[in-house]
Length: 263
Image (tube, rainbow, N blue to C red):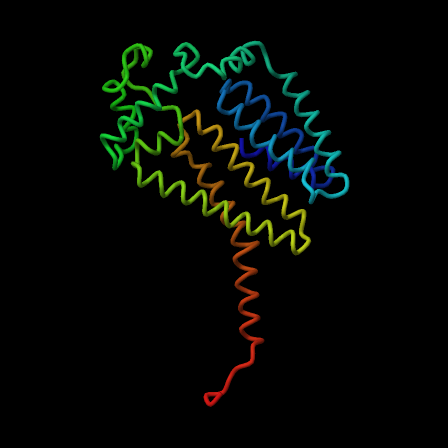
């Protein structure tokens, strides 16, 4: 999922050979998406690549030829997706709006409500797979589809049930802090006229956003790539905002006149 927006960025900035490789990699991603048959992954890809394509096409900071390239890539991606998608895939995606039906995969709303109930009784969290272990105490056999252990099917509620309200709060503050630094970095890049790098940061943000969208409907709170994406956005904020800001402040301090002890 995170690779989609990054590939779109690479198609734009790379040479001909790299563009061809990106198209090949994109085809493998589309094929993998169909084989996974995951509704969450489908929504994540749409969110990640779709949002970045919107920025590429409609951003006031776009460069010459950028819009046309983005439109061509989107058309190719849609054509390739339609080619590799089979009837089973479309039947699966057709149940996206049916969150409450157990037959569609899981009664997610019931699971989320059960996670809230668990978290009220266990506010400090229940540890790894805590929801799975206690699912039979909060969900009926019908809601659990006849199995004893069920996943909560949401990154957010997984985090809430495992590390508690305080842990989820720290996670949300981390996401907000990373976004805030990245936003300031993008503003600085625009002021410096570095528009290509500006879109690099947008690609990273869209990659993280798409993964969070997918994680809303699947257990991804402890997935390694989630924290790699958070780290990449944080590093970009440091490189393109915090470091230049520190250098500017250092230069200003050196250039400022020093007063004598007697004024």
